Length: 227
Image 1 (cartoon, helix red, strand yellow):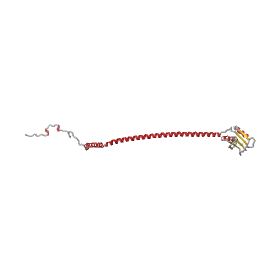
Image 2 (cartoon, one colour; image 1 turned 120 degrees about the horizontal axis):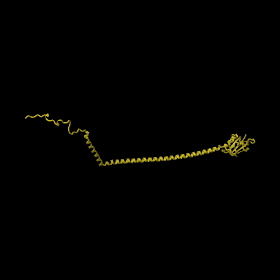
Image 3 (spheres, helix red, strand yellow; image 1 turned 30 degrees about the vertical axis):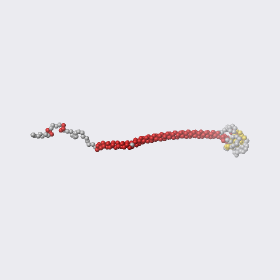
Image 4 (cartoon, one colour; image 1 turned 120 degrees about the vertical axis):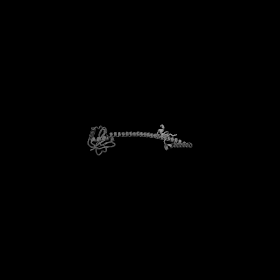
């Protein structure tokens, strides 16, 4: 019997005659070294943490860790409170010092003002007294008693000079003869400092240049006429 010879073209084409290019089905690519080692590293870290936790629990070291954290927080809080109290105390001391300084400054200022007012008042009073004395000294009182002594030997000369003074406004003038010691030249004597201005005015009125203060006069102003 003759054997039939079959070839590829002898079969009818189907879906298997045109397969897709590339691999077909579920395939995974090659992973990197780190991707393959990561699970092992995680397992090792977890095991290490569990071992450390177990050791801390058994040995009691976890109490020191927890207690140290609590003590640190308490110490920090205590330090904060202490600093706050110190700050408040410093602020109070500063306020007290400022208040005391302000009081002292106010007291010193008031005292200075009082002393200044007292000194000013005393100066004004002294100035007024000096002014009154100066006015009293400088005032010409034509009602002052004036005695005119004639030592010239000229009859009636004292009366003439007395008339001159009366004409000038003097209201209390008398003419007399000399007695006792006489000066070397014509002069106007006055006894009190308040009569100095009047004595100078009398001397000017009579044309006499010498004016002297003499104690023990019988009248406030005495005029001695000499040649």
